Length: 158
Image 1 (cartoon, rainbow, N blue to C red):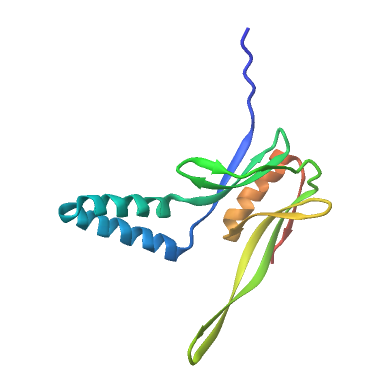
Image 2: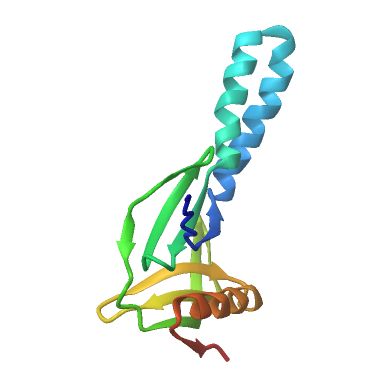
């Protein structure tokens, strides 16, 4: 008799590399394509450097059976990171915050303010950030997680 264990792991893609790194990747690929005609090796090298800059992303995997979380960096399908125990999770929290970003250029300084939603797993001694982004999308994920983990969902958004 063969027994198959089903492990429930939920994985979320949280962010790609910042836009300036991804832009460099696009430039490397375009220059690589142009150089394939004249300088074959340089073209291939630039394309090989550019592709990872577009494909690398951060994510979170949650194993609800083992009560563990892994914040990872995905490089060509290989997820690097360590599993952490979340068996004492008390709630899933959705929080809306005001964030600011300051920019200075010689004579001009500017501060942008914007609202952002963040999704946390609340434990006794810490809060683990799962992801941030759009309120509607995060609410769907928060409901799913609270059901899978069998914990309370606390909505602190307006």
